[in-house]
Structures are given as structure tokens and as C-alpha cells.
Length: 193
Image (cartoon, rainbow, N blue to C red; front, top):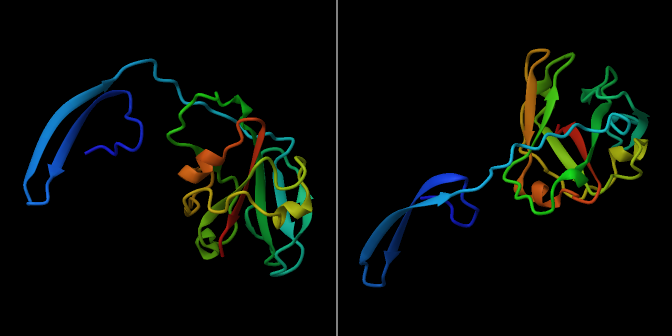
């Protein structure tokens, strides 16, 4: 049975409805529903390299940022050699999403460029979302600890093992609903350990 609380996909779907009464009687019917129309191609967006980068923790377990480093599309996520947490800030201009678009799923794709140590020791990759931004649009140290509009914006995942492997962070339905269709949406990607 399809979940009828969500829109049906394009194409033909078998729907089975079953009715129950207080006496325990049941009856079912089935029918096909065809959703026709122009299915939109997936919308692909790149983050804004001028606003992206990494933020490093000020001191061990401080929970506050000290250094912000804007480095185009590369940022370190994990622990530094001094065990200071490093996280990435990604900025997307999400105003290009049509106002009438029904978003059924969204992913952030990252590529592992370099690996030191064991990512599994750091826990899962998690993401916070800010609308429009964690502070200023430009990267700043306080982005490390700034309040988020939504924590847990993606389904936690383990980083890939091999360099050049891509991995995808699947946005939750709450995160999809929170996307800013009038401007910037920022994501803070970090390990949960």
C-alpha cells in the first residue's frame, strides 16, 4: 500500500484500500492511479565557494570556534593533530528552488579528498541547518557554536573509507521543509563524537 499522506509519484501506482468495521468484517478494493505530467529533472546546486570553509575549535572541548578558513570547496571535518574539532560550513543559494516545487528528497554530496586516522573513531557525520545563516553570510569563527535553525538536518552517516569516494548526506523531511526559498541556507557538517 502506498503512503497516501504524501503525493504519489509520476507514473502508475497500485492502491489497495481495506475497510474494517466494529464487527471484524473487512473488505478491500484495488485500483491503479496514474499521475501524468512533466516530471521535473532533479535540481542540482553547488555551494557558494566564497562563503564555504572550515572552522576549528578554540581549545580542546571548548565548543567554541577560534579559526575560520575559507578555502573554496575544501574543508577539514574531524579532529586536528591537537584533537581540536574541525567542521565545515557550506552555503547554498536556495532561492532558485521554484516556489511551487514539491521536494521529495535532497542530498548533500561530499567527496573525501584526504584522510588521516580513522573516521569511524569520530562517530557519524551529522549536519545542522541555519536559515539564512549561522551568523554573517561570510565564514566566521562563531559559526562553530552558533545556534542552528535545525539540528540533525541529515540522516547520520559514516564517512567513506577511500580517498575520492563521494558520500551523500540525506536531508530529513524537516530540513527540506526548512530550506530558505528566498536566499541562503547554510549547513554545518561535523562528527557527532
